Image (tube, rainbow, N blue to C red; front, side, top):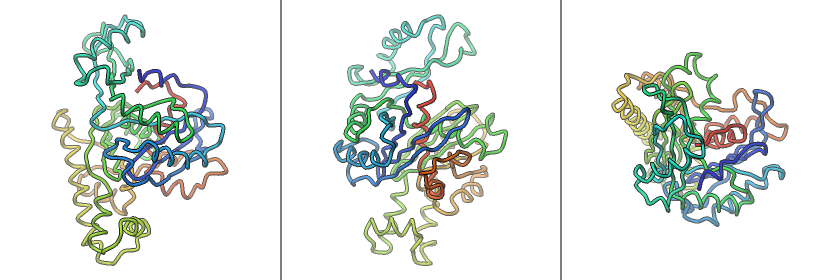
Length: 359
């Protein structure tokens, strides 16, 4: 059962975001109501180790996490990772408010059999009791999450190989939503009561979460990411993939690349974000999104925030969850700010050190 991994508290937990191209890690401490960045690390992934967010080579991923282990204080023993994609199912169900947690767990096992399209023997379950149902106060809303046990176990094994004990296996969309709360001061003061879309644009996948009043209303995965941008550079300028990645980061590209590569990719990115938001608006009956928070490595492409603001008419901000945090003396603050948008999911996972979140 996945919920055994959620017995948290006390020791600090390293947030480890296992991506297609890199593994990102963040360690946070809490002092009063404030967080402090104790350490962070980014290590490149060996090509072929991941495929559409599923680990293909546990040993290779474990070796990358082992490199991160050397950059994190030795006293930190525990880590949190996340599952995502089509193998993860989240549903809000309504249960009798009078049930104890133990009774709720038993009843959910029964309910899950009809709600989840996989044999329960192949699935890990967890749940979080939320607020009373507004239409029937005798019922409580319960957020049920299920993931293929194989997806959970590969992450547990990779963390173990890298020198960490898995304390939490989370759901990526909820880690992203949690990290968005760290960015609240980047948005106008009324954002908490408004609809905020958080779009994390990774190397191969884009994750959209819609938030309102601290709650996740909707999530969606799209197969799209910065890798397409890199491959365009490869094909246009006869570079290797590694050379293209370097050129993209250092902006060492011909003057005409803006028209040949950047503009077409920006158009694709705009279409993906617009489509994701439109699908939510259509299914929810809502009229518009008020604010847009973008993260992931692709959000660092110059001008993306302005493009989305101009074309979608939505106030857009590039996420920096550490903007108002202190940092340990050993942390390179300048580098942290440069890579901050890439560390959103890892930050949301690191917050599991201080919360009682189940999901």
